[in-house]
Length: 351
Ligand code: CTP
Ligand code: MG
Image 1 (tube, protein in one colour):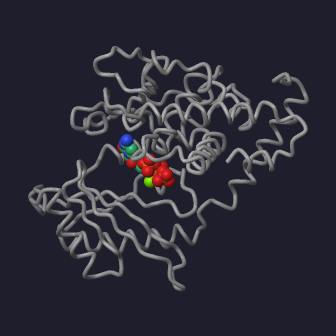
Image 2 (image 1 turned 90 degrees about the horizontal axis):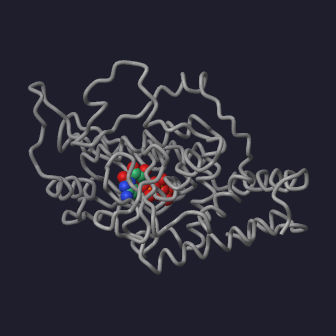
Image 3 (image 1 turned 90 degrees about the vertical axis):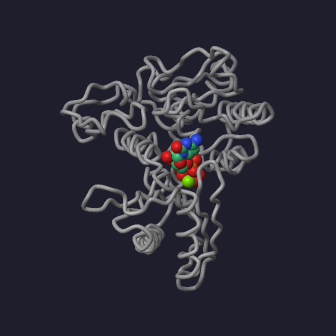
């Protein structure tokens, strides 16, 4: 093992950083992809308005938080319109809306439509194969009234704007790596992209000293907040979102480059983090709360930033965590013993 400091280490991590950036650049979405997806969103919004006038169809997840890779799925959330009397323009349940809007999309577009009205969160899954005119596959989930998802998307976006390069590069690299290593399938016992993103945020906010990011949920507001900016369905959704001011007045004392942070991230989750004892809680004072055995008895516990007590990683099974930790260790080994290796080759092997 080589020393993880000094000029040689610095050269290594600088090269690692450059290679990661070069590795990611061809797999980022193009302007054209964003344009086509935005046009699709508008087309679907028009249909939603026929079901319920005044409805909005808003993007959340990777298309809206700055962490998209090429050909990411689209996550859309339908907010039901309100009439002049302030009442919703439809009184159908989410399940009924899934059936009704699903049917309309099937009739009016060339999407393949799969309504899931009985799912825990009812959604419409739609997709369309690429054609010569539209050379992008579109896969999209449409849900209803999921305002918490819109808010946590805005939180991630705000973090991405505070430290635009390091956070985004780390998250994007982890997304590619976890997908290629098959660690990114909540249905198969591993963790969602959202979960990995929260791990990175926790690491940059609470583990790194000095911190790379401030804790936006604990910075005091600089303007009067409206009640609906503070609370949603009993959840505290406050966070400091005046990013323009923050970028002027807050600057991290941490100068580590992406390569160093990535090596450190893998080391921390290989051997330092206590999976058995701790819950990752971004909004807490120092990022961790103890598992108490009652509410938190899963293998891996990551508290949702807004829904206290809700475990984002509840999908992770014992086997899934074993695999994830094994991969963290493998990655950590690869990146710390990279003397003499061509780094672009190393990244390809790592993924
Ligand atoms: N989400 C959530 N709770 C979860 C999982 C997801 O609220 N347990 C919401 C979040 O708003 C998240 C969005 O769903 O931003 C999309 O999650 P996910 O698909 O995991 O993340 P993406 O960034 O969209 O990643 P990908 O490109 O892999 O789809
Ligand atoms: Mg997504």
